[in-house]
Amino acid sequence: MSDFLDASQRMVELSHGRTRYFDAGEGTPTILLHGVGFSAGGTSWYRNIEALSAGVRVLAVDFVGWGLGDRLEQGYSFAYLVDFVREFQDALGIAKSNIVGHSMGGWIASLFAYESPERVSRLALTASGGVATRTLSQMTEFQPPSKEQTFTRISSLDGLSLEDAADWTEYDWANMQAPSALESYRKILANMNVAETRSRYSTLRRLP
Image (cartoon, rainbow, N blue to C red; front, side):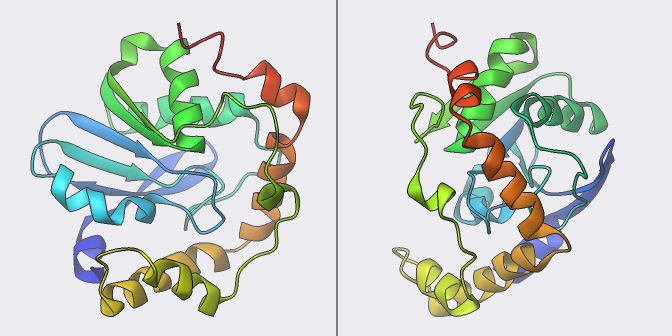
C-alpha cells in the first residue's frame, strides 16, 4: 500500500497554501472527495484509487482543513469548501471533470455541481450528506481517537490485510497529527453543526 500511495502523492499550491492529492492513471480527470472524518483525506479512497485508475485519471484530494496540507486561519464555510474544488481544478488546468463524493464530500460535490454544472462531466454520490438538517452526535461530541483506536477501525474493514491496515493507520495518524489539525477540524464541525447553515445549504431544493 505505502509504495503505491507514495508514488502517486503530490502537492499543489492554492490560495490558502499547499494541498496534498493523489494522482494516478490517465484519461478523464475524476476528482474523489472524502467525508468529514477527522482522519479523512485522499487516503480515504485507498482501496478505490488503483482500480479506478485503470480507466480514468484519479485525483483523490485532501479537502482544505484535512490531510497534510496547510490550514485556514478563518472559519470553514460551505462556500469556501465548494470553491476549493473549483480552485483545485484550476490549479491543475482542468476545465471539466467527473466528481465522486462520499458523505460530506457528496454534499460538497452536489453544491459544486449545482453552482458550476459546466465543470462536471459526471457526478457520483455515495452515502451523500446534505439532506438531513440534524447533526450527528459524533460531530457535536467529537473526541480525537488514539492511534490504537484508528488501527482497530481500519483493520476491521473487510478484505484488508493487517500489513495494509498498519500502513493505512500510519497515513491517517499523520493526517491527525498535522499542525493545527484538531483546531481546524473543530472549526469545521462548528460550522457544519449550525442548524441554519445546514438548512441553507441543504441539497433538497438543489437536487431536482
